[in-house]
Image (tube, rainbow, N blue to C red; front, side, top):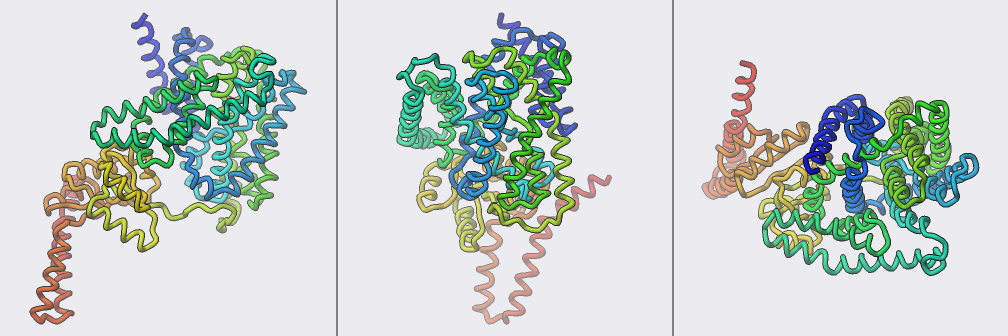
Length: 567
């Protein structure tokens, strides 16, 4: 039994390793790649795996972790920064598109009213992961249509919460709880409020106590426990596990431990979310497409047309130019991963029949496969239009600096950046330092900067620069080497303790290195020369010459490495 289960996991991993890179190379994205991999190995493909139910049970944890990550990334400050587009454009898009699709599902396709109430809004949601990936590849994240698309996606992520709560309510038999769905909704809100209050009082002190222990394995276990424990608690109170995970993410979103928790969860989340999408692919009955291809393609065109037709005038009304508004409507015309999550929960709750569930999976998958073509068309439309700055949304254009370490040196750099009005995010592994600095209003977060997942969670990918100020020479070298390997184009500056270490840091990829002793030596020498009566011009020439020769010794290692490479 165990060996059979292990063989299934190996087959799934092999399919993902082979198919997903091809899917990304074809600009289809990772999510369609996982879905296609599931189709290939599933009972409607090569038939390598037939035990879909047990795989699906394990994959449900992936949904839980996906919702947790979404919750932790939805910081209130970020939403407020883009409030006009998020709560204006995003809300109208979800409501109008959801109503139109629900009406079409009920009136033209004969879907029951209860199912249609969920199907319409679920199909109105787009693929956050897919769209962000495409915008990143196009380098359009800060463009006018990129910012508007992100704003709509943020609201759609928020909309998942009431939709998750809606599934068990719609699945209730008549007069089952309080004889009234409104009472059931109030009951759900009370439970959610109770979880939030308890989390606020106990979650942060718990994480602080664990961080003080300095045991990374225990912190990892606690992060997983928080997610799964909250998910299980909400499930026992009549809500979904995904809802509980989302709440856990929100509770940690403003915590100083958010980045470290994210870095601990990401490895589990990546594998299990991929497993969820593969389980969806295995459940997909391709016979529906082959039996009625014109019907499937017709519904796909209708879905894209309705979503684009609603979003285009709304985006134009909110101040986007014609081409940008059209680009947003094309980019968000697909249905996404949250539709799959909601349909899976609805199917398990007997809200959807198996045939309807299979058809909806097919439509979502086809819409995702059509997205790269629509995204390419959107980018072409925008390129035809003059790229004048759009004021419709306010996002910080200047990327923050990431400080790896917030000890004596890091603290001073942070103060200087603050005085200059420049944004920064600092990371430190000392929980007491983090608590002390956050009490002063500094953006300092707890975590081990030697973990690439932590730096990624802190925004290293989009950072203006990264400054490594660690006191531990070995850790500093490890961090610089890892950062240069992952982010080859990012400016990385580091603190060194000696000439040899400075040269090593440069060899490992640091853009610039400063010895912690050199500047103190220069300042003391300047005072001494001043006291000796050396003229200012001569004094600065001597000090400048020394500084240049010292840094030439550091940079010499780069020239040696390049010479070796040419040989």
